[in-house]
Length: 290
Image 1 (cartoon, rainbow, N blue to C red):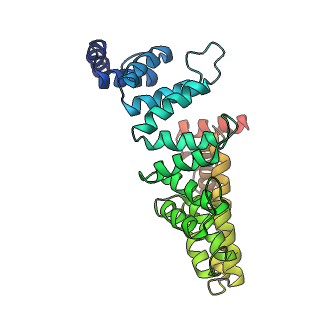
Image 2: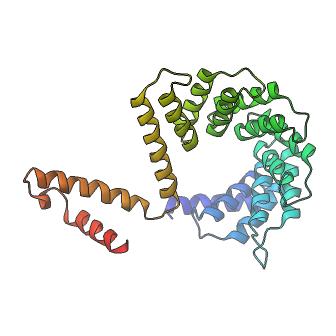
Image 3: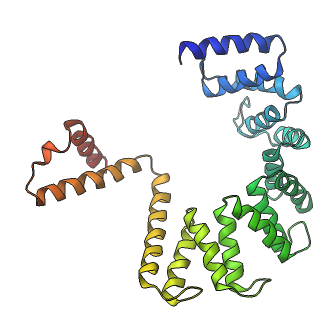
C-alpha cells in the first residue's frame, strides 16, 4: 500500500460518504483488492451495495458476484436469490457480463432451468458484443436449446465468436465443416478453423490438425506439418497441467537450467561461472520439493 493509494482511498471514501455513487463503487473495489487500505470484504460489499442501489450496472454486477461468493454470509455459501436479483438489475441496464451469467445459471442446476430465458439472455449479451455469449448462441442454435435448431444461424454466431478470439467456437466450426453438419463437407475450411483454435491454445484442435496433415485431409500430406501440430498439442497439454501447479514455473526453470548445465559440461566450461549462486540454490531447493 503506497502513500498515494492511501490518500486516494481517503479522498474517495470522503466522497462516497457524501453520497457519490461512483466514489462508492471505487471504494468498494479498493477495499476488495486492498488498494490504499486493508482488504475488507464486508465493508467492500457495503459500499458496492450503495453504488448498486443508485443504479450503477457495474456495481450491481459486482454485488451479484459478492453474493455468489457468499460474502457476508455466516456459512460462506452463495446467496443465489440475491445473486440473480442483482444480475437481473445489471442486465436490464445493458451489462453484457450480467446477462451472460444469468443465461448460464438458467441452464444449470443453481436455479430452475429455463432454456428459453437462457437463450434470451445470451442473445442480449451477444448483441452487445459479448464473445462467450456469441458462442453460447451458436451452440443454442446448433442443439436447439431454448430456440428452434438452425445450423445456418449456429454457424453465423459461432463465426462471430471465433472472429472475436474464442478458440472453442473455432473448434466447433472445424468439427461442423469436417463432418458436414448442416453444411457441405469442407476439409479445407475445417483445417482453417482448427488452425484458428489451435493457435488460441485448443489442444484437441492441434491433435486433429496432426491427423489431417498426416492423412492429407484438407491439405497435402505433410509429415513434418503433422509432427509440428502433434508437438503443439503436447505443449498445450503441458501448459494446462502447469496452470494447475503453483510450482510449475520452477519446473520449467529446472529444465532450462539443466539444459544449460548439460550443454556447458559438453563444452568443458565451468558451470558455476554461468549460473549465479542464488539461481543454483533455487534449483537445488526445487529439486528437494519434488
